[in-house]
Amino acid sequence: MRNNMQDYYNDNYLYNLIASTILAVGMTNELKQDESGINMTYNFISNCVGFDAERLVEAWQEIEAAIPFEQYVRALTMHELGHAIDREALQKSLDRTLEIMEIKKNHSDVELYTNEHLLGIILEEHEMNIVFEETAWQNAKQLNEAVQMIDEVTFELIKNQSLATYKNLYKEDLSIYSLVKEKSLQSV
Image (cartoon, rainbow, N blue to C red):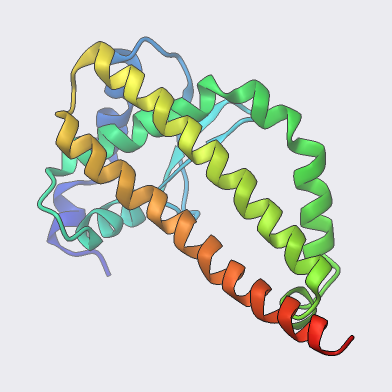
């Protein structure tokens, strides 16, 4: 059920806000609304920025800092455009990404999280994602510095909150990996 915020920040409003940010930084990426459950995405194959209007409002409401909604959306938009700037590197990673997806598809979660080799592949995926995320935020920072849409403190808050999601998942899996490796060494 949509709440008042989602009614105020409706699909049309969000589309226009994101599209205006794309134009303001001088980029021409296509924009599509989707219902992926992910607030914003960048598809490097189609070179398209996507957004889930409902999830975007929910994600903003989950932030503990008092960040204006428009600045939050503009920062995330620049972040997705930061991925677009890094598109060539993303394309080069496609073969390995598909291999990892196939490995994950062919093994249960129990296998993935109890087998040292498979868990190492999961960590590799996390590490790749973190590098891409950090690069996209560096690119977004340059875009923001050029157009001055978001003050530096607010931008850093949004960036750090976003990166923490990826880093926390990595840390969780890294601790599981340490336990699996320790157990493996004890059984030798």
